[in-house]
Structures are given as C-alpha cells and as structure tokens.
Figure 1: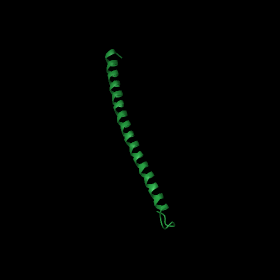
Figure 2: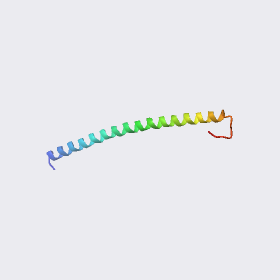
Figure 3: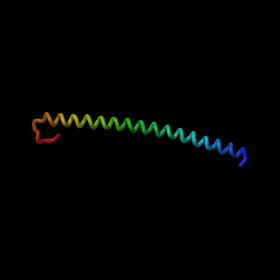
Figure 4: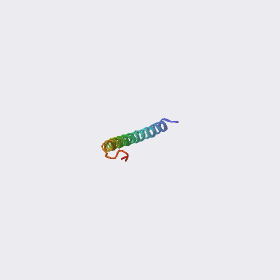
Length: 66
C-alpha cells in the first residue's frame, strides 16, 4: 500500500470516528431526556400514591378503597 492509499484510509477512518462521536452525543442527549421523563413519571406516581393514601385515611368509609 502506498502513502496516498494510507492517507486516504486515515481520512476515511477519521470521518467514521467523527460520525460515531456525533451519534454518541445524540444518543447521550436522548438518554438524558428519557431519564428526565422517568423522573417526572416517578414523581407523578409518588404524588398520586400519597394522595390516594391520604384520601383512604380520611375516608368516612374505610371499607371502600380509593
């Protein structure tokens, strides 16, 4: 393989690594967004569960579950 072929291969490899870096950043951003969504869902479930427990504790009909 001559020097020109090596240089072309190196450039191509560099381009691939650049694309991989860009895709990795996009994936990381997507994962952060999903984590934020999961956090919001967890907060909603926790708050809803607390409200249901409070309603059940204050219910005049303890045999009826909320």
